[in-house]
Amino acid sequence: MTVFQNSLGVWVLHDGSNYRYFQSEQEARQAMAAMNVSEQPLEIELAQTIVGVLLPRLRELYKAIIALQVDWNDEQFQAALATAATNGTLLAGFPAAVWADWGQAFLYIQQQLDAEVAALGGKTARQILTQRYVAEVAA
Image (tube, rainbow, N blue to C red; front, top):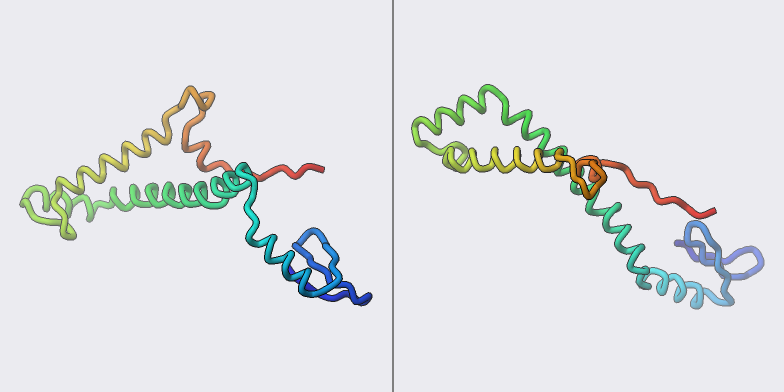
């Protein structure tokens, strides 16, 4: 948002798409401050949180789990894990049983994300979470 004085001496508040006009700079700056602290309707706040925060974070976590799976299947890692399990030693400070639990938990998450959900019309949670959602603007 910007506040400026136009060539006619009128103070203007531009919010990126709309212009509002004021008699003084103080009025324009107070309006800008009010716009910055005003609350949004709940549906706008929820949509912004879902599309702007949650879904991007979940996508990043999903990508991290997929990358983890690739690394997890690395032959050297699997050999080190097998050695730790056989010898009862720690691997990076954790017992083999903990590594096994982590591996099973990550597999379970992936299976659940890829399972068809009747309540979603047969879509998977992964499909819903990885889809890009662009708000439609009323003409």
